[in-house]
Image 1 (cartoon, helix red, strand yellow):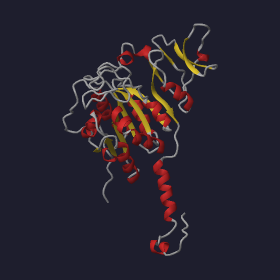
Image 2: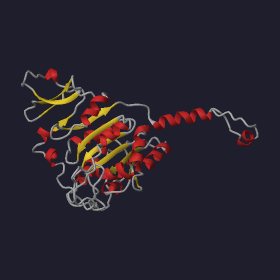
Image 3: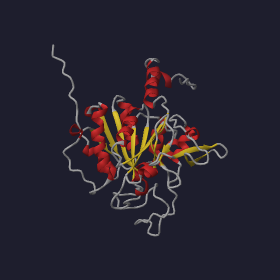
Image 4: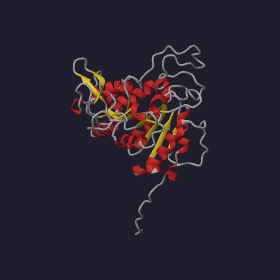
Length: 340
């Protein structure tokens, strides 16, 4: 008998390829890549059981730089390829890497159905509010007034909110982080990976060439304490350097409002407690507009449900119990067919 050998502890280097990383210097994608390579060993996953699937765009170079299995697919179709992969081999850890244009424009239909079916995929959407690879056209998440080669006078389109879109598709897990948040982002990745079903993570990612600094008002470390609400399940929604700003639910308008602890009789008892399973509050959190409200980061909604591949496996088991089908006999049986 051969001796059993214990699997070695992996390091970030075990998940990095020898390929030259070809993004613009200073691109936020570098930070996300390094964070992923550092976090996967902490999750205890194996490269041979991990797959990265991407579409088209700057973010979609990602699989080349991961020493795992990977597919660089066609524009917008990464969720469809990933769904087929997960159904063929449910034991695989499948990550979908996509951008705001790839996932929400040409790929919006595929993204929607992967989410609503609750396929066990980890979908990471790099949101830089612009098309970077094709030289700066406005995207579905670009803000009104965005000037680009395709909108020299400023975009008049109203932007789509990725997490609101995901909730509308009946997402069971949504979260948000920032490319520079190297302490926060790993925790979000770990939660997304641990969730059984479709996890949808929006990552604010800076495009240094075509949309530089668009998130700076809330993403800069110097102002983060005043502009970011870091959500924790079961904890009050409080932020600020002095930890005195908070969210309260107005019972009359059924809307969120910003209050200051200690003013007008406001106490911590008035503050809204984050409940990851509350879908109504999740909708309110993702619709908060900065700067009137802080930007909500972390796991916003998590309420697991049966996965698509589990339902398909159960259906296959049931069909197997029917026995061998005889198509010729079915055709010759008469004008009425009984279909189970």
